Amino acid sequence: MGMDAYRFSISWTRIFPNGTGQINQAGIDHYHSLIDALLSKGIEPYVTLYHWDLPQALHNGFHNPQIIQDYATYIETCFQNFGDRVKHWITFNKPHTVATQAYDLGAHAPGRKKYTSKQNGSVGASFDVMWYEPETNSTEDIEAAQRAQDFQLGW
Image (cartoon, rainbow, N blue to C red):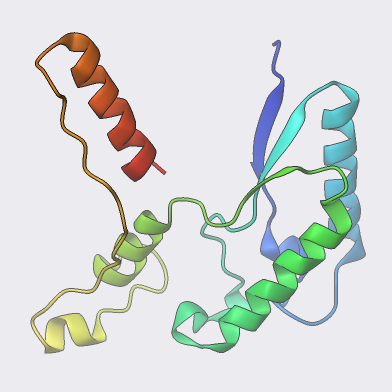
């Protein structure tokens, strides 16, 4: 296929079946094998650490301040085990989607709308981005402005 890069996600529960506590060595070994196989073929791994797969045992998730330490322990474990070979890490896949789908629309877990309906308001995230407008109506300027916007908002 001629690929020189491959992006995949590490499943938090494959490393920590209960979200925290005992490390699952079989999970660590699985990712060692995958990473080694990619590198042996000249393929650079790009690893996502969180792709919407919060361990069920951490059911209160981002509503619980303990999640900060749980996540830090999980990613530290990943960095220690795979960081000698993985040079490209993605901390959160599409955080804006997690925020809107889980906490606003309720389409994904945890689907909490307690205060949204009670206070007749909305819950969301705020991102610091820059806005770009083309300097002229030329195709080149329009495409450059769109490309700059994609870098700001397309993550």
